[in-house]
Length: 256
Image: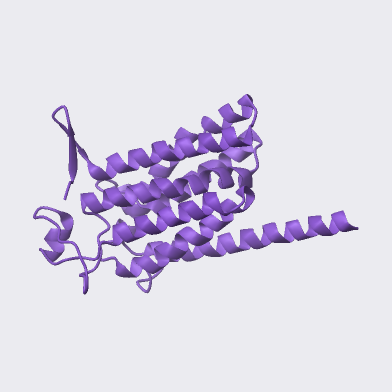
């Protein structure tokens, strides 16, 4: 288990390292899409300048969500330190910034979501590898095939040397497949909606195999991520139906 990388005597945890690599990959994917669409230099600069703010809002949203889910709303005011990041909080923060930015820049919100959301898939996949190596977001005790974590890691504290389901790697593999589908099979204007359908669908199912502390949202019946997955999935289906309806109306007008 490689929990750290060492550069010039300095240790870097695997999770932030892989997350950082994922962020860089997302930025490259966004840039590459813009080059492929041959947008003007002005629009390209406008969109590329939004990238750091998307991730800043994402980090803030991810931290706030983790604090609320695990410590309650009061944790934000009484003891707001010592929490981690949740991806769905990160995603919500990023989407909130894109909504604000669409109002400021005059760019359509749907266009921004179609551009940014699919690019996050690759970052998520890399981040999950970092989770696996770092020992967070671990799975339940495995019945068939599992991974034992070393002494000192969080999974070892809770489960000892018991083999656990490598759920992080399962989710990473699923996200890479979603990434290929979005960029290889889905048209640009449908990508945001399909992202909101496919990504949460896999997360909802895989959450049943997790065993780490994830907090509470609405009820104990489902994990916070599963509740949010349902909300995002329904939103994605609604958005896709709306797109299809608009396309159908446009075709009818052309045939009249």
